Image 1 (cartoon, rainbow, N blue to C red):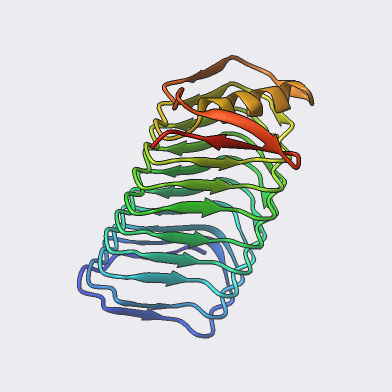
Image 2: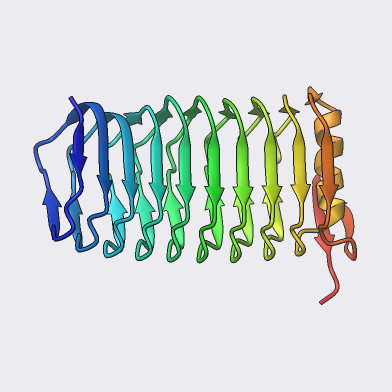
Amino acid sequence: GSLNVEARDLTSLNLPLLTSVGGAMEVSGSNALTSFELPALESVAAFGFHRNDALPILELPSLASTGNMFIGQNSGLASVSVPALNSIGGELGVEGNEALASASLPALVSLDRNLVVKNNTAMTSFALPVLPSVGRDLEVQRNISLTSVLLPTLAVVGNDMKVWGNPTLTSLSLPTLGEVRGNLEIRGNVGLAQCLVDALVEQLQANAGIGGTVATYGNNDDCTCEEVEGVVEATCPP
């Protein structure tokens, strides 16, 4: 069955022996929650964690698979760590967490639907080091402190790719990306060198290509790019 927790005065949720939840698990609106421990949880049909404003760290050390994962609107959450998670059968959403500086999912190799990272005010970098594909949309939007996105093994985006409104973004590292099956939209990232974006478009066109429209504008047009040991690097005026 499902497990739903919504308790305004709850300060601690510790379930040391819980290994699986057959349905969805949702923890929401528990604004006094400061201790959250599920050390043995390995699988859950879907995991939602939102509007829990007091918890600073969310750790799920044993979780290996879930259907959907949504972490959103947790104003005090500074760190997310899910080190064993390798499979998400649906969507991964990390949205509207004002204090979130880092989200670590180093083992994720399968994501069947959307990847959405948006409105995380304090996040400076986002990386999925071993993810080879995104099943549907990839969206990175309105993260005002984000400087780098690192997806070194990503080869395919199954539908649209949208990176926009990230004003401090300077590094968009997608060295193995060869196909975007829908639209490509990289715009309004005023710190991101347009020549790097152009190089990414060329990289895609030299491989399987872009299935839809291309919109790349509102980025930094004042930079110059050159290839150094096979890597395109940008130089931008201060």
